[in-house]
Image 1 (tube, one colour):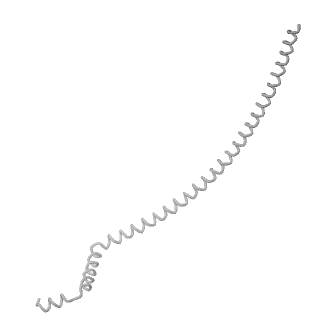
Image 2: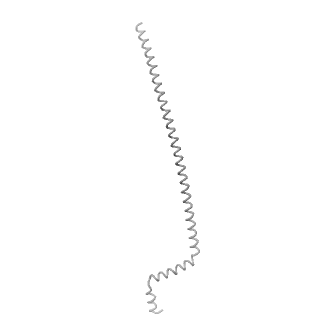
Image 3: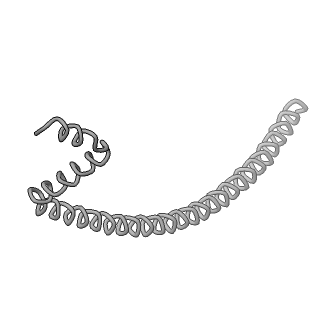
Length: 126
């Protein structure tokens, strides 16, 4: 090659030379790896589709679980409220019974003390 041909080859714009090089590289890559690249693209598409299906199934499953949990929580809350009301009622009844027992015991004790004092007074007079 002569010096003038070297100079004209070197005077080509670097971007054009790079583009031509990339184009050639792409052709070589497609020749060497074309089938594998197609297989990888197909695998990626299948993987993304499976991921989307799994995500949709998981979302649906979580929504179902959330609904079941909310229903169970509402049921638990209603049962707990009912049990507390029953407990409160039993406590009120027990407190009323204790109060009645205490009042009766107090009356009985007062009556017994009154009888004892009368007997003591009669013995002292007698």
